[in-house]
Length: 138
Ligand code: HEC
Image (cartoon, rainbow, N blue to C red):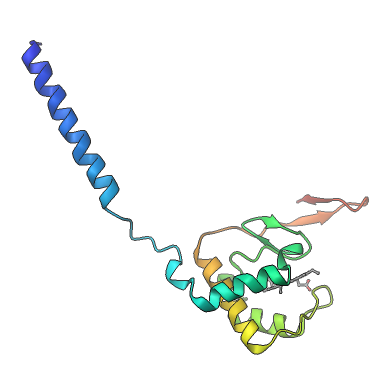
């Protein structure tokens, strides 16, 4: 291959590289990852989630306490959803305390859970409590 042909190919590749880079950096993706769901209400919900320390018992994306289930996708789980979450937050259960949240606080919390649900997928893991009190994944 002659030197001029090599140079020609080299410059073609350089130009293609810049065109490719330009496209990669300017074309966005259509994924919205729930960004439009991070409303003011959901932000308040996020702060409440921290205030009441829900992570002491619950995980988001597998991180948090293990007494309650992972809440990342609970809103879209079959048989669960918004009404289920509201009821649980209003009443508590034998193992989950009733936080005596106001209607507004529950709305914000549900808005936050809806937002989290849209951000990705984190399957609920099953844990078992060992005889010595430690917890391991099933
Ligand atoms: C003391 C531990 C504890 C704390 C703190 C706690 N939870 Fe729970 N939560 C549980 C347990 C345990 C369950 C599973 C239901 C049961 O077994 O009673 C649960 C269930 C839930 C569920 C239903 C999940 C599902 O997939 O069925 C939601 C929603 C929920 N909690 C939200 C919250 C929120 C929001 C907070 C913070 C305000 C919170 N929890 C704080 C223990 C806790």
